Every structure is written in structure tokens, then in C-alpha cells.
Length: 113
Length: 114
Image (tube, rainbow over all chains, first blue to last red):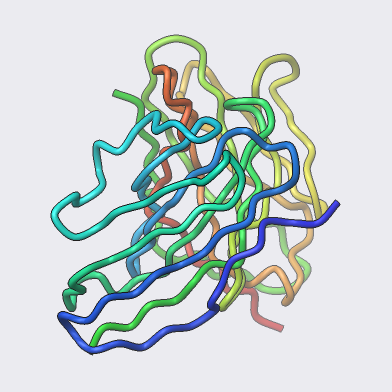
């Protein structure tokens, strides 16, 4: 089966600019996660979708981050405006059976200068 | 709250020697534990998981992990390390709240020397 697809792979932007990341989960996977991995740290959940509804966005900085999952399939994560501390790898993951199997994409490495 | 701890930032081992990457957990209820590996500029790759059953779990690439309830540990092991095993390893626990998200440790960098 095809894996979780993410784009772009790399992005460099200046602070205060906006950026968007895209994720296409494995076909049939109802649950989609966005994680932020800052250098030297473990991934931290930003937002979790079940189909097109939000399950958990408690760690999402809602003043600058937003995410949507249209029609319960693809998802986009947006940052506007970006700050230097947003430099990280943004990982998307999907799961068919909640809590038992998670497949991660290759991630998008964001550098904010 | 669920959490995992990886006490070692880096583990160094010679090729051919056995390796151990440590993980301890703190959960309420039965733990669902995972190990992932991350190579440079790559996403997280699943190695193995413990849900229930045998305490020794076998996974991908010759790795295994031993679940120890009394010591609240889930150490990753391999009998004979390869240079290609050099990577960043993450232990994770499933959050038992209704979100079922993975909660990760801080990671351990494994360096295998020829």
C-alpha cells in the first residue's frame, strides 16, 4: 500500500511569512495526526482528526496555526505568521484502527529565518 | 498522565556487539508501548509494539524489546549491532484517553562503530 504522502519536503521562509503543508494519508485511514518535532526533541502532537472532525487540538497554537481535513481525506496545516521557534519537522501520520497502528510520512522540514 | 522516558541521549556500540536502548514508562492502566526509528531526513519508521501477551516482542530489522512490568521498562535490544542501525530511536506510549495519540520520549541516538 502507498504510504503517507507529505509535501513539500523542505521549506525556508522568513519570519512573519505564512506557510502551508499538505498530507495525504493512507487510503481508508480515518485518523490523521500532525506532529511537530523540534530538533533534539521527540515529536509532539499538534492536532488529531477523526474523519474530518477534530479530536484533539489542545497543543495547537491557535493564534498562528490552523489545520483542516477536507472530506476526511487530505489535510493541510498552516502557519501564519511564522516565528523563528516554529522551525521544526512537521510529521503527518495516519491510523486505521485507533491506537494500534500509526504510519508516518517523511515529514516537512521548516526553517524560519 | 502517560509518559515515557529515555534516560540516554546517545548510545555507542561496536558493530557485532549487542545493543540496548532504554525506555521507562509511566501509565495508568495497561500500557501500549511502541518503538520507532528515524534516519536522517526521514520520517518515523515503526519497529515494534507491545499491546499484550509475551513480554518479549520481536520486530523489524532483528530488533526486539522486553516488557518488564515490575520495572516499568520497555528496553529495545538487538543481539548484534550493524553500522546501518545508527539512527535516532524513539520510545512511545499510547495515550489511553479518548484521543489515543502517541506520546514520545526525547529520543536516543544510537551510534554503531565499525
